Image (cartoon, rainbow, N blue to C red; front, side, top):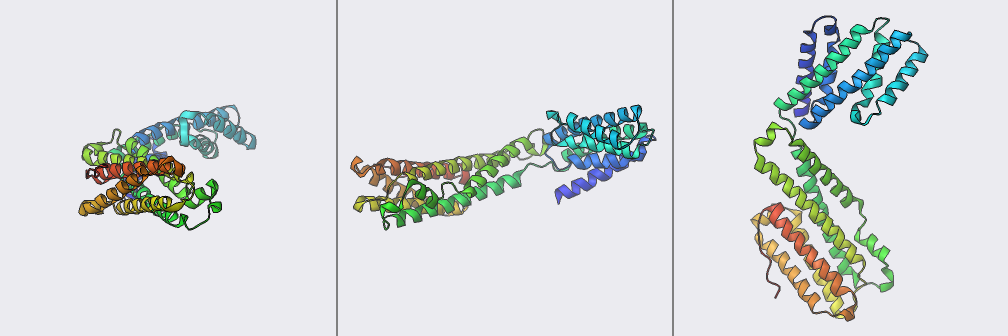
Length: 354
C-alpha cells in the first residue's frame, strides 16, 4: 500500500509539473510520469542510481533516432538499424536494468516524431529525467523503504527451517540403531538427513540477499536515523541467524560420516545427540518463548552437556564417533549460544562441563 500510494503521488506530481514546462515540451508530460514510476518504491541509493541510468539510456535512444531521421526517413530498414544500434549501445554495464529504455525511446521518436522529431527528442530528454528526479524526492520524503519486512520475514524463515532440520536429524539418529549397517552409505545418509535440502539453501540465500538489501536501504535514507538501534538490531539478528544456519549445515555433513552405532555406547551416544537436537530445535521454533521460559534454554544446554560427557567417555575404538559427535555437540552449543545472545537477546551461561 505504501509503494502504491508513493507511485500515485509521484506520477501525478510529475505529470502536473511536466505540464507546466514551456511548449512544446509540456505536450510530453506523460513521459515525466513514466520516469517517476520507474524509480519510485526503490531504496534511496538505488532510486538515485536508476534515475541516472534512465537518463543515460533515454539519451542514447533519442540520439540514435535523431541521427537516423537526419540521414534518412522512417522505414523498415532504418527502424531495424536503429534498434540494432540501441541494443548494442545499451549493453554498456553502467545502464544496468534500465538499458531497455534506449531502443524504446528510439522507437517512440521514430514512430511518432515524424520528419521533425526535435520537439519529441527534447520532450523525452527533459520530461523523463524530470520525472525520475521527482520520484527520488518522493522516495526521500514519503517513507523511503528500509527493507525491514523482508529482513524479518527471511530471518524467521531460516529459524523455522533450522528447527525442522534439527528435528529431522534427531529422528534419524533415533531410528538409526534399528537398521543394518548395509543400509547406510554416505550418500544414503546424506539423502536421509537432507544435507542437500534445497529448502535450507534457498532460505539462507534469501536471508543473505535481505541482509545486503537492508544495509543498502539504510544508506542516505532519512528514516534510518529515526530508530538506528532497532535497525542495527534487525541486521545483527539476521547475520547471527545466517551464521547459525551455516554451522548447522556443516554439522549435518559431519553426521553423514558417522556409521550406525554399534553396541550400547553407540546407541546411547545417538540417543543423547537426538535429545540435544530436539531440545535445541524447540528453542528455535518460537524465538519469543525463551524470553518467557528461560528454563527451556537451560534444558537444551543440559542435553548438550550430557552429550559432551558421553563423547568424553568413549575411546577411539568406537571409530570416529567421539570426533564426529563431539564436533556436533560443540556446534549445537555454539548455535544455541549465538541464538540466545544475538537473536533472542538473553545471555544464559551454559552449565559447567566438568
